[in-house]
View 1 (cartoon, rainbow, N blue to C red):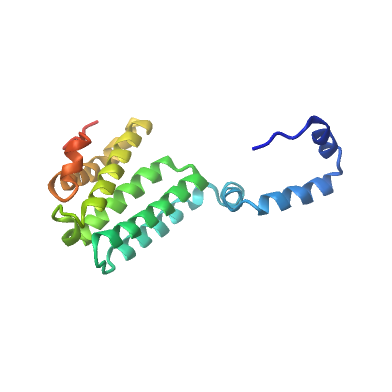
View 2 (view 1 turned 30 degrees about the vertical axis):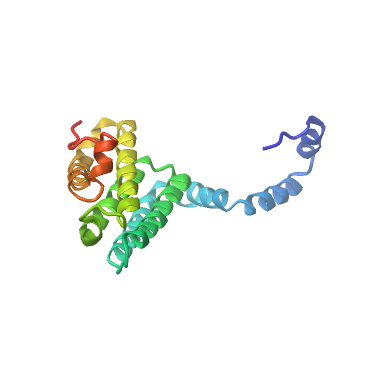
Length: 184
């Protein structure tokens, strides 16, 4: 991002308020993420957070129940859904939701696509690594939340850890030294 020269900054600040507002709106419209952040901060705020999370959860369930030919296709869908979670966090700064939705994503795909995740083989290698990395991500994010929230995640985290150590991701879980259980 380039710095505005001092003389240009002074000239901009001396513009009439109406003209500055017009320019500001033009600039904001060019940045979709900024538009979404302002929409959330100014018009929605935290009262809409649950609805936003629910919408992502519904997408996770719908996509996880779809037929996937291969673990690779399934992983592409998981990555797309994870992108939605990341975008949600960029807009809302919802750290709790980031952990909750990522856990939900991983556990729901284990629930609905166990056939593709049961055994480690050359076809499941990439998705196994992806799941192990996402699990590690969750474990690194958890300590950043207030410890009062830990009890809400304990069951889902341990369910995921058991699956990660039992099914296709187990090789990577051992290699990455992911614990078998999580206690706070």
